[in-house]
Amino acid sequence: MLLAIDPSWHWKLGAMVAEERLVRGLTQTELAAALSTQQKVISNIENGRRRIDLFELLAIERALGMVPLRLAYRVMQGVD
Image (cartoon, rainbow, N blue to C red; front, side, top):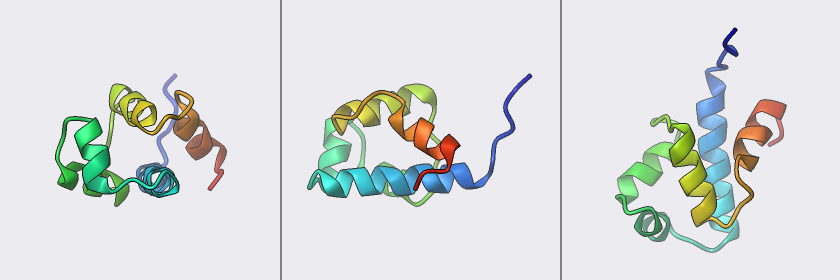
């Protein structure tokens, strides 16, 4: 059985990406460069306008120096 997806998870995940990026002193442009993408993509993720798949999440966490799937865990546990 598949887990029901809470629509707010995309927004929460994006907000957490922004928070972690800012804690590390990175701009959206710098994170985008580390991921070989455009700044607009990062903006859309952070604002919850773009869903990301598992592999994108792992790449973002790696670029931020995070433990893999830490953000997904926080979203599912409701930790802000």
